[in-house]
Structure formats: C-alpha cells, structure tokens
Length: 217
Image (tube, rainbow, N blue to C red):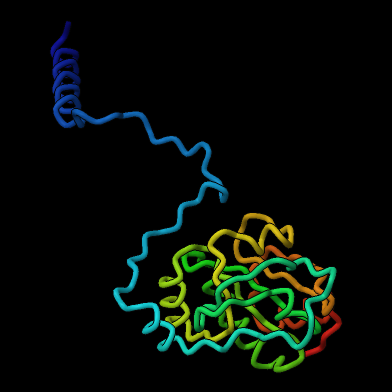
C-alpha cells in the first residue's frame, strides 16, 4: 500500500470514530410516525382556564341575551327537545321554541378552534348588519365554558350563545364532526343548509343567508 492510500485509510478511520462519538445514545432513533393523524383525532391545544369565576367572566364578556320564544315551538323543528344553558347568564334555552318563527344562523365553534377565531368577528359584523331579520346564535361545542368566555372577551365578540359540550346540536342537525360549522335554519325549524366551512368575511355570510334562507342583509 502506498503512502497516499495509507493516509486516506487513516482519515476514514478518524471520521468514523468521530461519528460514533457524537451519535446520540439512549434514545429511540426511529422517526416518530405520522400515521393516523387527522382532524378526527386532533387534540385541542392547552389553554389555562381563568381563575375568575364564571359570573365574573360573564360580566366582562357582556354577551347579548339568548333569544326567547315568541310562540310555541314548531312541530317539525330539528331542534325539538334540545335545552341548553345560555352562555351569557346560565339560563335554560329551549332551542326549538327560542328560534322558532324566524330564520336563524347557528354557528358551532370551540375555544381551541383557530378557524373559529378568524370567523367569529365576521359573524359579529354580519349579525350587527342583520339586526332583527334573523337570529344569530353561537353554540360552544366544548365542555369548558370558562375558556369559551375568555376567548370571546379576547375576540370582542358579544353574540348570544349556548353551551353544548356534548355536541347535541351537531347530532340533531346532522353536521359533520368538524369546526366551525354554520347551520341555516328556516322559521319552521327545518334545516336549510349545513355549511362545514369557515367564512372569511361578513359578505360571504350574507351571500349564504340570502341563497339558502332568502334573507337579504
């Protein structure tokens, strides 16, 4: 073996020794698998609950009162039998009766949902424009009501809403297990359209309401 070959072999040995020396010990070198990740298995990010009482958060949020019945609940309403707590004050709301007789936009959301955070201010803007033409009601679809109120305070959103940690509304209207979801409901309580998508502007909301409910805002 000539001198150049010996020097090349020596250099390779040194490089190999360095690689062995710096290679991490005691850890599993197998890459973490990404199989099985989907929206259905998504876990909400950690969010520390406020130490304030529910009443204090309600006062700070200053949410609009939930709608109240103006007559008997429509017989064919998809919301028949659903009674949920109003986020603004904890009172019980019979959804079929409260929303009956007027078209409604029901928005399903949760405090950990990023698209919901972007959509809710647009929904507030739309509701302000719509006035008394239809009911706009949010449905918080997670058990943690304190976090919901804290988020609404952060967003400066004051829409009326109900607490639905068990997903009863989603099941009743046949919505998919994703968020956000907007449900357009006719005055007789039947579902005109389920829209499992975030709205990017109040104009988009107005277009959907005009198309599926015939209400021009």
